[in-house]
Amino acid sequence: MKRYEIAYRTTNGVKETRPITALMIEPDTIGPDTGVLLVTHGWGPNRFQHEDKMRVAAEEYNLVCLAVEYRQSGYACDPVGGYGWDCPYDASFYQVLDVLNGLRFLLETRLQLDRSRLIHYGGSQGGHIALPQTVRERRFDSVCGRARKICRCSRRRDMAGYLR
Figure: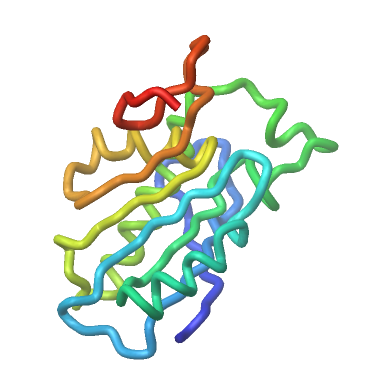
């Protein structure tokens, strides 16, 4: 298994000058049946939040895993300087683009990946990012988004609408 820290420039930031960073974990051998797992962390945590799950996915399921540190979150957050959780909220528009740009970077640098095996997992804010991302990018084979607090409901429902 290989582990990398990567950085790329955002393609859509007028005010965004920082590079977007990501954690990538991949199997030792990548072949035509190797898929992709995007892992999107919650608002407070960072790209290392699900590293244990990424390692299992790479080893046991032959997936290249990418966890993007999207803007205004994790280590990219700077509450002292006014960058992060206290910025005006844009309903994750830019964060979705940051993660999609990570997918683009991955697919451009790993041409042999099986594009029919694209999976996106996100928890909390990461689930909120994963779900609208699939509207834009319909190539995803499956999505697991755990974003229960997107709307105010008296009863909790999972992604499929079942009561919890």
